[in-house]
Image (cartoon, rainbow, N blue to C red; front, side, top):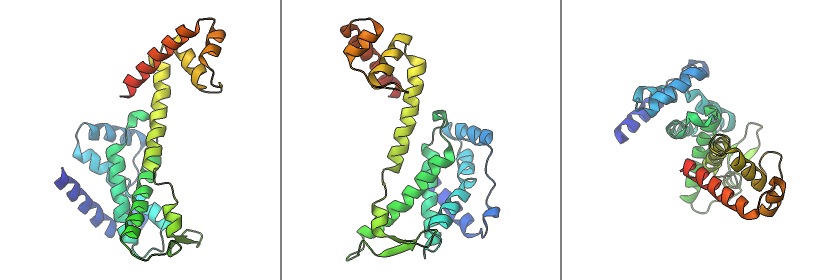
Length: 226
């Protein structure tokens, strides 16, 4: 597996260094083709995996040119961002319904930010106000700007994806009564959260019955997520 990854990263690097304009990148994939390639990659197709990476390289280039255009090590940032793209392809799940480019952009940006943080850790006597780059408007980007950015991007994306899955499970796995109680108890949609006794009064059932149904529903959702 490591040999395949190393070979793929080498191929990516060579491709990047040989391209001078964005138009020469492999064209973006259609939604249907991208979806099918992800299914093939999940089934073990290395060709499908490589095609997904190669056809999304322009996204790495776009992010580096947009946010780090004046960086002295722009080529290094493209390689680092490409590693984030590889991670995005390997961790993305089409069944969650998220848009891949949005997810991949977060992974790419996170990989570059982690690179800057690693540089900071290995450098002694560095001022947090030292300029390391400029943004697209020409404003200085300092270490304090980098380390103050949210470094839990991947975790945030994962949490949003799990939330979408949870809402789907509520609609498909729970009974009508279970769904009513979960929506009322946790304030889903436009509903404010209610205490069990309030839910019992709304539905005309006992509080202990609400508690039992809620517990059963939560167990179903827990098992589905696991």
